[in-house]
Image (cartoon, rainbow, N blue to C red; front, side, top):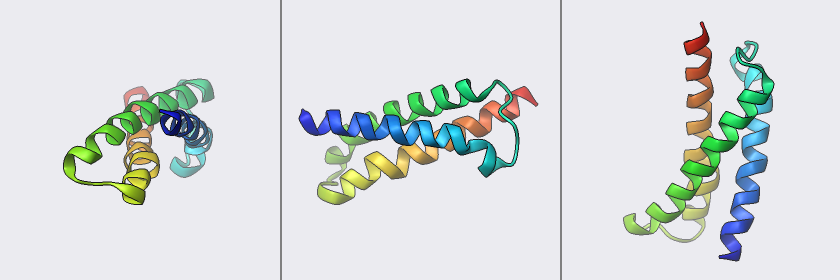
Length: 91
């Protein structure tokens, strides 16, 4: 359980960074403001990260690969997709 708390902290940090720097990656201003970008990416990171953490063992994925998938792979990609959708909805 302690490992999941550490992962939660990592997801919060990564989500905040993704939300803060999304405008530089997409070369556009946040349509709903920087706060919404950060909150949307943090929420996406946590939800997808927790889901990946519990689904990976069901798929036979353990160890460092499970850690990489649940912290960097799926949540990061999902957060960028959510921010891209937010920009398309406003436009």
